[in-house]
Amino acid sequence: MDRRTILYRGSLKSCNYHCGYCPFSKHRCSERELEKDRTHWFRFCESLNERAEALNIRALMVVPYGEALIHPWYWEGLGALTKLDAIDAAGSQTNLSFSIVRSLEIFEHAGGVREKLRLWATFHPEMTSCGEFAEKCAALRREGILFCAGAVGVPENLEVLQRLREMLPREVYLWINAMDGLGRSYTEDEFQRFSSIDPYFYREIRPVPADESLCRSRLFVEADGTVRRCNISAASGKNWYEHPQGLFEEMPCRRKRCSCYLAYGGREDAVNHALFGPDPVFRIRMK
Ligand code: SF4
Image (cartoon, rainbow, N blue to C red):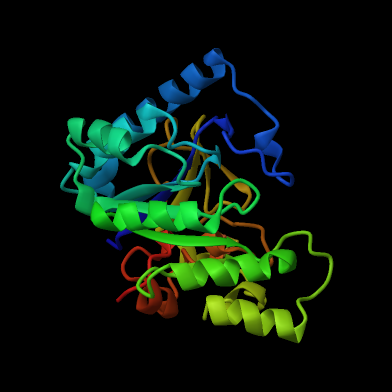
């Protein structure tokens, strides 16, 4: 059985950052909504604990709407999952605004294995400075935590992103995502400058025709158990909790293109493994 990966998105829809373009920065979750997200998350962790070994699920990444890692329950759950023999890697996308010391305490109190923790850190120039973000990255490195860093390829941010590239050690891969809603193609100059920051930027702007047969070892699971093949594919009609049998079998994704890294980067393409190792979804470059 192939090694399998799950992406999980809870019911959380809120963030402590307030970036202008982001819908989740406008919504403040009530205590009740947060409690619901917490309950969903622990229910999911428990189900993964029960199934990971039998289904050969080796990696989990949380891809929240908003910021999950400012909430202690995500650290507790990741800690409990990384202590399982079946799980090789678990982590989350994050804006890196959490307290590293406090969060690692919760993680390790839950039995977390630091070597298995993976973070996908997004730099938001509206909300933090290059210096502050680079310092947070340095602190993660001192703690021995594996992560990638990156930002959206907004042409107006080119200079600041080049500055960030200069401030980070070469070992830290800095990805650039193609900007949704740019409304035009990147100019040759922009393409060259973004490519000098992220050598794989070309992968963001070439069309990748969908091929669901390359996605049979992955699932995207939502808080209520809705299952999709990936973050952009159609809901399959299957439910993680209600129909645990045959979850990984063929399911049409109904997409023409795999249009973002979480989609194309999680496919069983040899290049993904060559660049990003056994769990390319975390986007952490092989040395
Ligand atoms: S859209 Fe998603 S499920 Fe469909 S082929 Fe692309 S990555 Fe796979």
